[in-house]
Image (cartoon, rainbow, N blue to C red; front, side, top):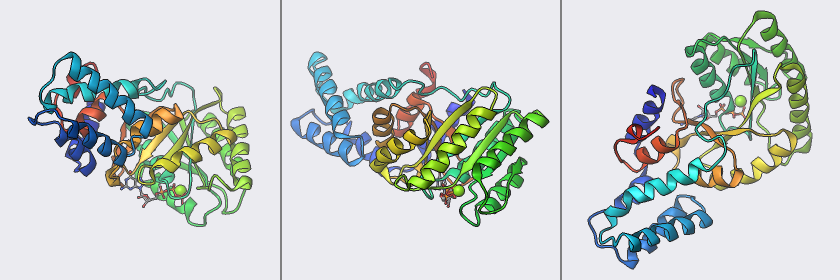
Length: 313
Ligand SMILES: Nc1nc2c(ncn2[C@@H]2O[C@H](COP(=O)(O)OP(=O)(O)OP(=O)(O)O)[C@@H](O)[C@H]2O)c(=O)[nH]1
Ligand SMILES: [Mg+2]
């Protein structure tokens, strides 16, 4: 609960023009047709997606008739609950990662610069705080500075880093990292992979190989393959996800740089279109700026509403 509360406070304090704009629509003004138009416009601007925006508006219109609502503010809670319902509808949403295998293998994949290495470091720190021993696997052997970058994170969060030389086979790094974890009884192996454009088939083949080796070597198979998506780049995440999914089955999403996006609605469109749970959300560059995603906390915080964590989480 403390962790969920954390996300609530951080998001609430984060000035997000889009969500403020949406939130401000719900006021003591009379409910008129202008409200519906403006709400639709804001939802679309925020990347909620056309289909979801239409659905939300139809649902709220019905509620406004049923309950004879006169002022827009009376619809705010119904709006929040409609958002929560849609997020919770995605299988696995809000469920933390199961780290009961030893070692549990977590792969981070995504396009260039989406935040994989940073997320690997932040996750290692979180898991260590939960009492887990973490090994970081430097499977980005492609970009020259990548190994060094992960080693810096390793030092920062006191996690061992398994690395080979620049240019070597990334599947071999994963093989060694899982071997080292088994030998030392480590709990988690976090694999940082190279950023790749989903259009480059040789790199996607390499990822498939990493996946094969990891599933074979990890005791329970790969625990999670998380697509690390930059919230700022918005809707083109859908295409990436489809192609990545063909090389390696994805189990969830880490949505990074949420502190920088003006499109808070991306959470809805991404999770609903991909049918993948958002596991974590990145809220800054620091080691502690990664939070477990909780649907209700997220929505209530974003809309500047109180009491999210007194409702059932
Ligand atoms: N504001 C903010 N910046 C972030 C967040 N996550 C990552 N970054 C920044 O995004 C930039 C790229 O992050 P990396 O972790 O290097 O991304 P990557 O996916 O490993 O990049 P490649 O390995 O080159 O594909 C860095 O400057 C990070 O500090 C976040 O949640 N918020
Ligand atoms: Mg990287």
